[in-house]
Image 1 (spheres, rainbow, N blue to C red):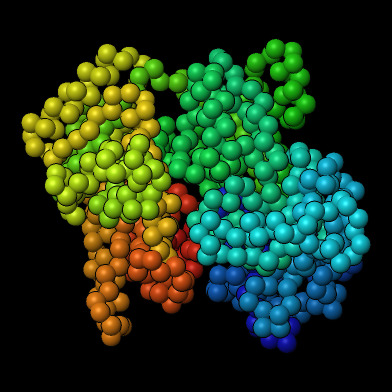
Image 2 (tube, rainbow, N blue to C red):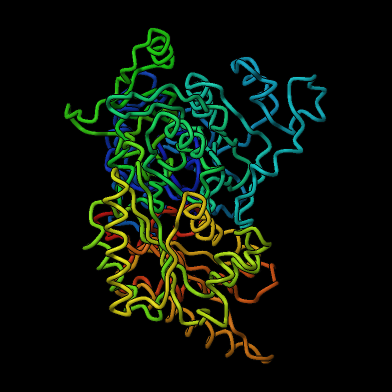
Length: 618
C-alpha cells in the first residue's frame, strides 16, 4: 500500500451521498452488504461515468472495495494494481468520487469527504420545497440577509442532541419535507452534491443513531404524518413514516383494532424509526416482531428513487381510494412474488434508504384485558411464574414484564405521579414497596397481562393462574387489576422506569438479550465486578453503584441501567468504557446479544467484529 497515494484514513463507503441514519437510533458504520457489488457495477457501467479511460475501471473498482474493507480495519487480500490507480483523474469532491460517497471519519488532515451544507444549498431547497417557511430550519442565513423564508437556528439544538444527552451534533440545517417527492428531491440533490444527511424521526433513541456526527443535514420526517386508512376487513393500516406511535394507537382503537407495537416512548417516537430499528416492545411475545406485522412499505433510496413493496404507489392513490369509499389498502398479508425486499429495511437503521410510508397489519381490539402485578422473592420463582403463565393463560397471555427492587425504588423517588398521592405515596407503588409489608431488596416484580375475546373465560383463567401461584407459594403477594384504570396504573409504573432512572443521576444504559434462565445472573455479575473495580480505583468511602434491571422477560430482553453515583450527572468517558466492557463481557460470555431492540447507533459499532463472524460481515 503506497501511503503517498492513499492517506491513512478510516473510510466509510455507501452507494448514497448521505450518512443513512435511522429515525430513532442507527449505526454509523456502513455494513458490507453483498448487493454493493451489483451497485458499484451498475454505476461504473453507466454512460454518465466520468472517467474517459475505461481500461482503468477494474483498478477503480478494486480501489473502492479496498477502501471499503479499511472501514473495518482489515484488508483480506492485496488489491491488484493498486499503485497504478490514476488518482490524478479522480480528485476529492469530483463527480466520480462523489458517486461512491467515500467519507473520511478519522482524517488527520481534518478534511472531510462529505461537505457541509451552504447558503446556496438552502436557496436550492427553498426553490423545491412546497413550504420552505416550515420545511427549512437553519442558522446559515442569519448573516446573509436571507429574507423571511428561513427560520431562526435557535430550535436546532433539539435536533442535534439525543434523548440521553450523550451524543451531540452540529448541524446547521434541518429539512422537514412534506411528502415523499420532497424526500426524493432532497436525497438526490445531496447525493449529486456530496452533502451528508442524517435522517431523524422522533429522536427518542438511546444509541445516538439519529444524531449527526458533525454538520450533516438533518432530514426530519415529523411532517410526514398522514394516516390514510385502516382496511376493516384485512386490518391493514397505511400511514406515513412520521406518524407518532400513540396517534396510530388512537386511530386503530377508534376503529376497534389494536396496533401490535407498544413501547414506552410511544407518545414521541415515530413508526418509521420503530421500523428502522425493528423496535420490539412489551407485546413482542404476543405479536412477534415488525418483520411479521409490517406487510408493506414505501422507501426512498439514496439516489432519490422511490420503491414500493406491497403498498400503493402514491399518496394520491390512497386519497382517491378514501374519497371513493374504497377501503381496500392495496397491501396484502400474503404476497409471494419474488424477494420480499422490505425486510432489508426493517432493522437496517437507515443504512439502505429512508422509509416514508408503512402498511402494518393490526389485530382486532381485545374485548377483555387483565393485568396482575406479582411479587417474588427469588428469580427461581420468577421462572416458575413464567412457566405457569404459559401453561395456564396460554393463548390470552400478552406480556410478562420484570422489574427489580432498585428500579422501583427510583420510580418511587424520581418517577411521575403513579397514584392519587405524589410519587405513589399510598397508592399501588407505595403499597408494593412498603418496608412493613413486602419491600425487600431481593424482591422481583412481574407485570403479567392477558388480552382476549371472552371476559368470563379470561377472568376464569387468570383466577386459576393466581390460585396456583398462591397455593404453591410461588409468589409472595400480588395485585390483580379490577378495571382499566388500575391496568393503566400498573403499566404507568412499568413505563416510568426509564425516565425515573434518568432523573436519578448520570445513567449508562444497555439493551441486551440473554438466556432467560440467566437473566438476573448478568445483572449480579455486572454489579459485583463494577463495585469491585470502582472501589479499587477510589481512595474515598466505599462506592456502591446502583444497577437497575427491567425488561421483557419472555423475550430474554433485559434493560440494564447503571447509575454509578446518585445525584451526579457528569459524564465520564473512561467510566463509560469500563462499564461497557463489564456489561458486554457478561452478555457475550453467555452468547447473548448486545442490542435486543435499540440498534447499534453510535454506541456499539466497535463490537461488530465480536458479535458477527468474518464471513457474515463480508
